[in-house]
Structures are given as structure tokens and as C-alpha cells.
Length: 156
Figure 1: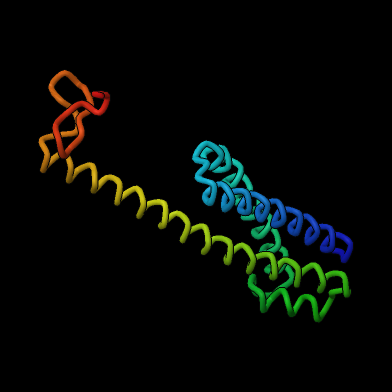
Figure 2: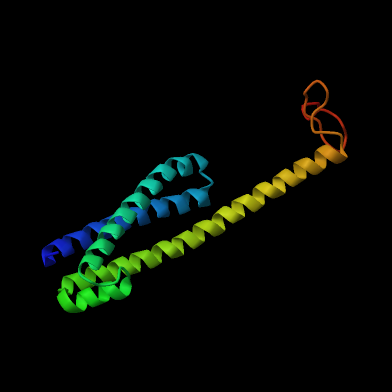
């Protein structure tokens, strides 16, 4: 692939990574804010970005293989040594940095999800314990009852 084509391909890949980082940043913020509706909407966008990144990486790998190089960072570095311009190396370093950023954000997202799940598990455990030890949180008429007194929560 000509140098200008490779530079364009790397720039396209960089733009796709930036879009992915933006979506991941929104996802992280939605988890912090507890915005489940936004998380649902971001899922489709995140999947589309992953698909785009996969296609771009596959194209880069195919180009490296066609050049007789391995389809990995070692092959890319060899291509840069043989054919690359300074702009290529800059773009490649930015891609590597963005991938590292995505890994770090993904770890934080995973921790936030685990925190949300732990909170939900605790709330469920409280409800399950209350229903099994106090005879339920609702009376036979469907009225909410306080677990410790058996009186409706709406009673004065």
C-alpha cells in the first residue's frame, strides 16, 4: 500500500479509536451516575465501534501479511522501519496509546459494574431476608407492611 494510503488508513483507525474512547467515557460516566437508560443506548454504539475497529485492524493485518510481515505490533514496527514516514510512526504510537487508554477505561468500567452489582445483591439479600423472616413485605391484601411491626407503611 502506498505511504499516503497507509497514513490515511492509520488516521481512519485513530478516528475510530477516538470514537470508541468517547463512548467508553460516556459509559463510565453513566455508571458513576447510575443512568441505566443511557447505558442501554450506549451498548449499540459501543458494539458498532468495536465492529469498525475490528474491520480496520483486520485490514491492517491483511496489508502487513501481503507485505510479507507478521500481523502484529512486531510486523507493524518492521513495516514502519522499512517504509514508514514520521507521520506513520506518530499515528501508530497514538493508536497504541489509545488502545492502552481503552484497556484502562475498561478496567474502571468493570469495577464500577461490580460495585453496582454488589449494591444490588445487598439490596436483594435484605429483601429476601425480610420476606423469609418476617412473613413478607406485603400483607394478603397487597399492602406494604413494615417488617418489624406488621402494620401497613401507610398507617398513621
